[in-house]
Length: 189
Image 1: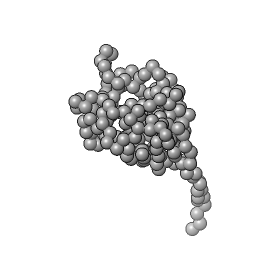
Image 2: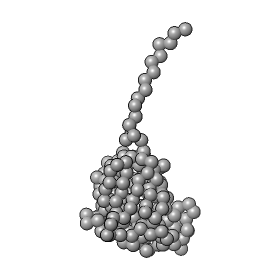
Image 3: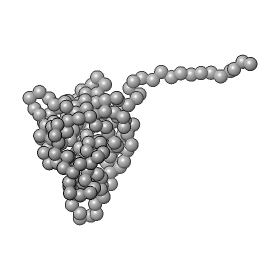
Image 4: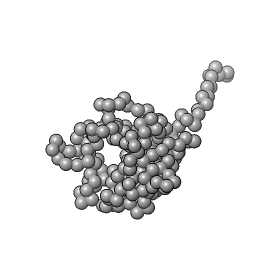
């Protein structure tokens, strides 16, 4: 019996798949500046005011050394169209915030705040949190005081230091998001 089935094989390019890893390292001469390298391209980034630290503590301003994974993308849907990414995507709502209190049982987790309740809101007037890549730093297990809210987000125009995150330009973020998935390793240090 003869088959008339046609087999078609599509060649996929490495650029069609999520990145295996990205690397973040400090720039020579400035512990608060660094470089992010992924798949043959390199972009400048701002690091925490404490530089890259192996022993991260809440409030020290350090960017934690280690290997992490992105968990999801938070984005300001009221300001930008949904970006292309392999990550789960969640729009930021006005009540979304992050718990940075080591005494709180919800430490280093997203929380919802009511109108006048204080907290680190994800909706900011500036554009730093227009795109936030949530990482698994200090998430499993969560240890009080070992650092919270370590994100990849947008940089200030002068690339001033962050509170411990890795920040970059919007164009670099969008390029990175197109290739970032949950299995992408973020190697810092």
